[in-house]
Image 1 (cartoon, rainbow, N blue to C red):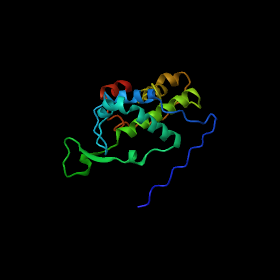
Image 2 (image 1 turned 180 degrees about the horizontal axis):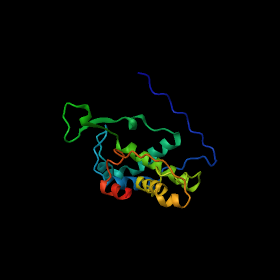
Image 3 (image 1 turned 180 degrees about the vertical axis):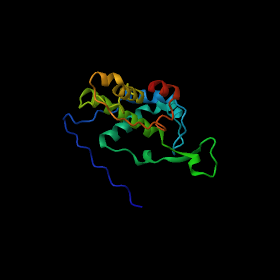
Image 4 (image 1 turned 45 degrees about the horizontal axis):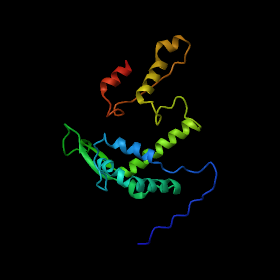
Length: 191
């Protein structure tokens, strides 16, 4: 097997396109979020709580690793490799393929890196721009699917039509979109 190709040295120009180094703050915030989670480990076998416990000792090394990944524009292939687990749905016959929900478990370190990148992108778009459209609800801080439903509801009520608003034909399929959200909240939002 041939060794992987060498990574070209990053171009270190002094311009506005430089990527800021990963800061301990980025990492500490994301590691702290792991404390509240009780997730199954990915292929590396390390649960999120192990990263929480090891963050003080490994934090600086992990920070340098994430900074190098950002600098080179690389996301390690190993962090993209998952472990497929089938979880049986209650009340379904075991011999039916639809009785199982496939879940892919990824390494926590890769998910940490993804969250750092997502937060930086959101901050950049909100601060430097171009900002996302006002009607964009996904991938925005302090906006949720419930906010989007409430907006659609407001646009399609008789009140909007009475004010000379445009009548919209809206179809919203939410049957499986809210698997982790309490249905009482969804019902309340649709009233």
